[in-house]
Image (cartoon, rainbow, N blue to C red; front, side, top):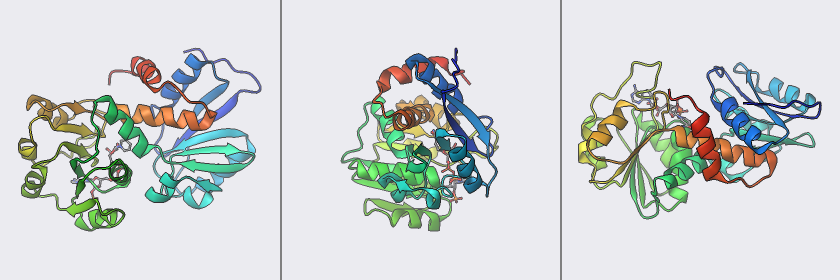
Length: 285
Ligand code: NAP
């Protein structure tokens, strides 16, 4: 990838801790290079508790914007001058633009997931959906599914109290437990299952106790895993073996990045073309 540097090149960045494994610089620089835009996208480790210090540095050194991952998404909230509705609903920001010294915050998690889902030709309107997990990603995805017209989103989580807190944000959301029996019961009649837990993620030995709940899904139900490392989790391979259309978290990651670049540049991008370019540039694993 060719990055042309001028003294006026605008700086973008992803912050987090850990963050050095992030695919965002590769994704963003691929798009910037293809579009010949005068930006460079970097990667910066910023430890927990240092969000405000980073914001001061980013303003002073003239960053045009940045993305934030763990542990800064919530900590950014009180530092923003302007927060869009998604940020206020989810209580976290992952994209920040800096214009005239002021911080504009956005959350692209939910919209990125919906765009990825649309690639599978799945539309949540009127559907019953089973969502596993009640953490930050689950909240963004659940609220975007509710906003997109889902009839019911059942939020199953290991810690029931976390599911109950999340579900208080919309009447379409309903909390439930995480036992194999409960998961199977709730899977019945669902057109979509989304795993928003970290079960099956690379670097952790934790897996679902059983995937028997997949057998309770109706034929043709779509199964999504937000995880993209590994590309194929046990959940996804088992779902495919049962004949379900399945999708990993790469599409969500890519569409979030496209939305973030639209915020940074103010341009409206050809999302399908950008996604095609980025998928080609990413390593297979
Ligand atoms: P998080 O806030 O830490 O939430 C983790 C969730 O997993 C919680 O609901 C937690 O349940 C559950 N969990 C953890 N260990 C479990 C276990 N042993 N058994 C059952 N449930 C367990 O994390 P997050 O930020 O929401 O991220 C969740 C996943 O989404 C991660 O794998 C992350 O990589 C992925 N993600 C992908 C994208 C993308 O663009 N594709 C974006 C964001 C996140 P408790 O409430 O009981 O602790």
